Length: 152
Image (cartoon, rainbow, N blue to C red; front, side):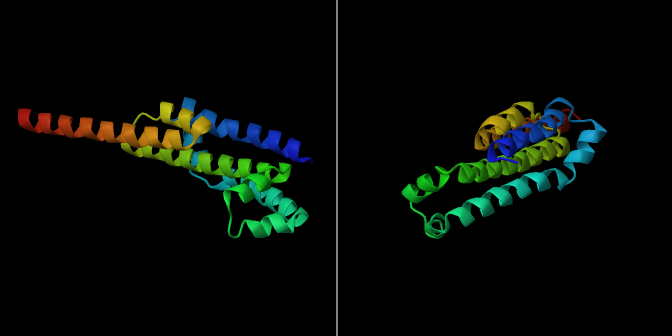
């Protein structure tokens, strides 16, 4: 399998996980699938593959990453395999954070659709969105609790 084929396959692989978290968050299948770490294993395997092949091909680039400078990072990621490793890293970490957002939403009954979509496309922006949304929902819950206590 070529680097490009693996890249394309990984991009397709993640879509069902994001789809079920966004469109079917309460579905038992979603809860079961996202309750497992198994969805991450193929992506981690692809990451390791890209990393090993790339660093074996250019040991000097790998050594430069031990104490990196921005120019070293730019040169390293200029290689197709290194860019693939970086992309797998993004896919794994974004999906992991998306999974965390999903479970936070389930646990705290916080709306997560917008944050999950942002996380899928912009990673940290989705996390920030969820942090803000959760804070607003928590404030709303506190006000509701105080109002209910005052009325009772």
